[in-house]
Length: 450
Image (cartoon, rainbow, N blue to C red):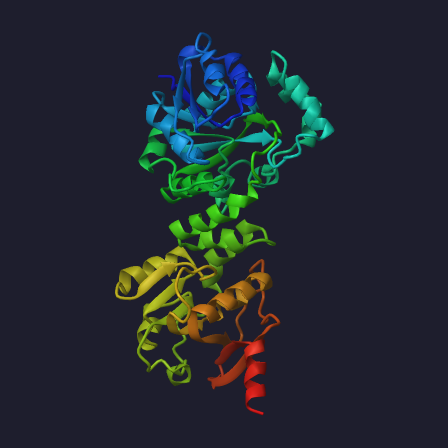
């Protein structure tokens, strides 16, 4: 039995761009019985409804509207998901141009790949200058009766999809990536309708531009569904004028995403500015094979753990380590270690994170013990990490085990960044303990002692 497709288009006050997308859908090679179109209006005040309804004779089209309460693209898309009658949902942004074969290619993709999210190539993503000569040239083609001709234009190579290098690197099998959800952009993406409903659709607590799509992608990934790119799924995102700079809400929504999912992959996406995200996350996933975990020779008297209160350990922690050092909280840096701790020591509060971003007060912990995990954190991220440890803990200790072999890992730090002071507290010949402070704090203490 052939599956059908529901195309969901959120829109707001861009009736001209919406018309271009609907014209492309009007020219599909697939029979109209195989797909429907749901235009989800996020409170437009222009001619959006008239434009949408003008295609009702050519398409199986429904128009739905929600009151303008600010940018609520996720809520708008959920209207379409609720109404969808076909087995596959395709999300298209307003102003995305598609080829005449897209619906048939989507059907074929999902017949070959069940329980899989389909990502296509969207030319022009991150191209925001609608006044650029090439943008104007493509817009002139898009304004014709056949806007899909843009996809046959050789000039399109100058408007690449910024994800294309990653698609090529993983040979379109995005399950090989440590974080395929970071490529889940709803400019054009497809998934089986029941999978989207199973994870609850878009989180409607996102207001403003950005990250509601990545958050849904993250939940699909955590639910175990597959991700795959397919070069037969192609589109062009026409550059157009933005009503408000997207940066105004993007960072706010990103932090909201981190707060919803306080886990390493998400917090790392928030602070990781200068390194290849997949490589850093992959390093955390396998570094437990190269770093010590039990520290059975560690002298707990050096750490002042006799005090009451919460004591945090960060890294790859064994239950025995937690017991011996009276650890109350663990930030475990991969999923495997997290599951071990949660299963064997349910009384210890264990989170799957490193602690780059925390939503707790200053000095929440009496102590924070950072195991040798610091040696595999890139230097620029280590600065962020240590700053946050010093914020949330009264005392921060760094463990330094001699002879750790890290040559097989792609990124090796093994040095303390400038701006921090490490005071040796002693330790065994195998594992040394250092008290960490900010360099400014050390200088202030020395001045006060004069």
